[in-house]
Image 1 (cartoon, rainbow, N blue to C red):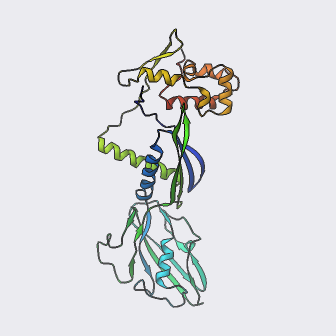
Image 2 (image 1 turned 45 degrees about the vertical axis):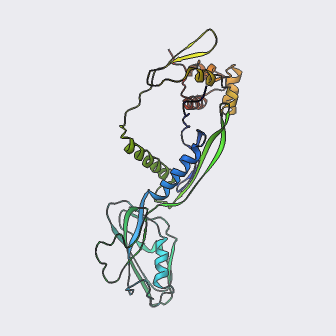
Image 3 (image 1 turned 30 degrees about the horizontal axis):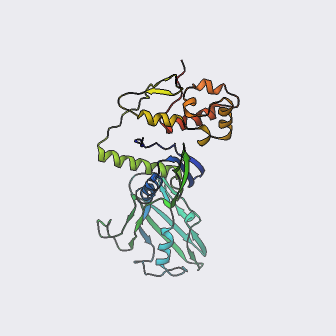
Length: 333
């Protein structure tokens, strides 16, 4: 009998996580779905997450971006390029301004900005320019705004800028890099299922996990809009299992979810040692002579917790694996 159902993957697994950097894995993806989801998520993460960018710059003594400043080592164009590398977090709505005022010979970094409430500099060590003269000074005013993706300076010009205001292209994306890898893994008797690994780094204005969760929410919202889906509170379906004389567990489900009987029988014959259980969990099940999924679903949670070396963590591992195959443990009575 051919497969008619696509097995759902396991929940998101955090491999490493350190603020703006994170590595995440999704296991048990149906063959081919690793690249399908990985490429979609990567494109959404790069293009659709909101962030903060500089939209306009005022530099005292500079009327345009090709000017030079007395007592400053860098020209205005170089200063603008350095300013674009400064990343901000904006915790208020609408546009806001931040200023920088430095006098005397010194190197100027993003830490010199006098930020107002609700504004945070994410990379204060970013170099901006160097004042070389003792009497030199550098005064900068930035306009910050929230947005999505890349916006050319020609696109957000509603009014003609005043003299001395230099408009800059806005790069709102808070993502520094994102890539994904797909590996084969075993699920049951098949070895061509996918494991998706996502490597993500942000500019610090949001965490890596927040970026991934936002991308997933955007993807779901797009599909819901297309299909006009309604959000319905999920209710767990009560499934009754009985052991027949031939040793096979027969499962009766509601008409809304009819699963092919022959396929289920074959699924319940899947051996425990072919699944991705931890060594401790597999050993406990093996010592209790539980060697197939059919034998496992005949047990309640309390039955498993009574086994030697089987704890709450092992129980959670078993329940997650069974959920992948749309199976559950026997209800306690």
